[in-house]
Amino acid sequence: MVHPGREVAVLHFLAVEFDLQAQFVHRVGVAHGVLVADLAALVQVEQSLVGKADRPAQERIDRAFGCGCPGGSACAPQYLGLEKQMRCAGKTLANRRRDSVNGVGRWIAGVPWRSLEGLKVKPKNHGTAALYAYTPWVGIENGNGNWLVWNVTRKLDSKLRELMGW
Image 1: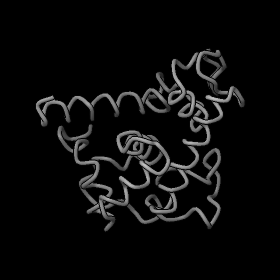
Image 2: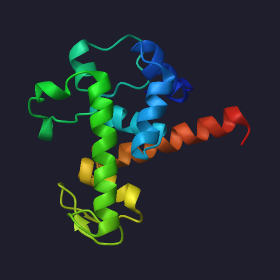
Image 3: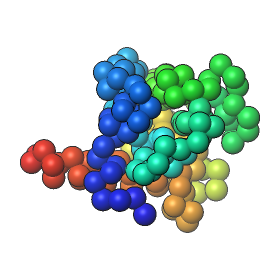
């Protein structure tokens, strides 16, 4: 179980724990039109890194977003490392969102498609379509996939609202 409040420290986790500037995390999000919260949710889905009390093994950090590591296979060397993973994830999500906007690819907003576990999914918006293109699993039964992205994002948003008084 993630310690309450730890998930709210997304920028701290990505910036301080991994010696990255918070501005870099923000810049990646802005450059690709991806929310920092979505990047945090994705890194939780791929490697369960958000909310860890201790620094994870370098191998897990190097593969933080699973980008360039299709289907859990070995990662291409050019994608290893947190900064490279973050850039790759941001760019990939932006490209898959653009695909949905342009009506190309498998995952398009408003168009039903089957997840890898065989469930029929109809993404409500282009951002959700991009997440399914990135990780084509619903994950309700196993507590992973896009269910986990949704759940982590929802918890983060709730905690931020509470802390910021929104």
